[in-house]
Length: 195
Image 1 (cartoon, rainbow, N blue to C red):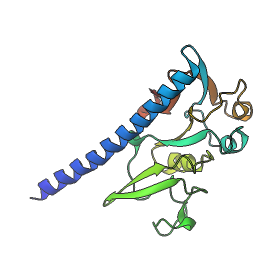
Image 2 (image 1 turned 120 degrees about the vertical axis):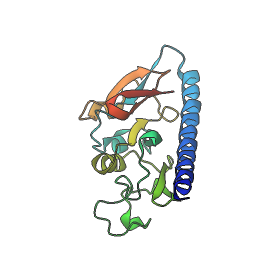
Image 3 (image 1 turned 180 degrees about the vertical axis):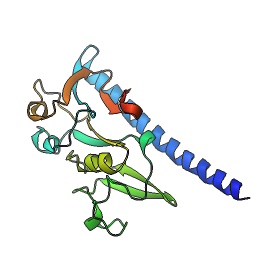
Image 4 (image 1 turned 135 degrees about the vertical axis):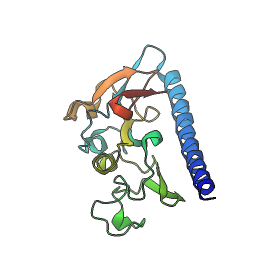
């Protein structure tokens, strides 16, 4: 009897995880189609390599767009759905509640949703995200790196000389083919081109 309950919990968790992954892939697919139409084939766009990014905060302040075209994306396949998320909570948080005093994000762009004990889903409200990288730094330090910064191509003006690339201390910006505009850091440090 106990094994059946555990099996149902795992199936429900897989259901939520699969649904979240499908949602991200569909949205990235739509954005990629829009970008491909906008830029045409054989063109290049600016993108941030998350394996080089140091979360310095310059993406939030140096972009010509206000707020920045750089946004946090959540690679759900890597997420542990932790109760104590290093990208959501401040390091010295004493209670795990959603009070503003406990949240790492200065704009409340990360939404925390209960799935089942002890699992929570974290999603990004891109309209609120300013690309500061604080959540990414926290996720890297205390998690598995599922929060990553990316240039959102549906927002970016694709300037000839990217103002963020000029000031990026880790040289994380480069031109990538417009038909493969997203570079996400996956398991084992390999790059995954998400289309």
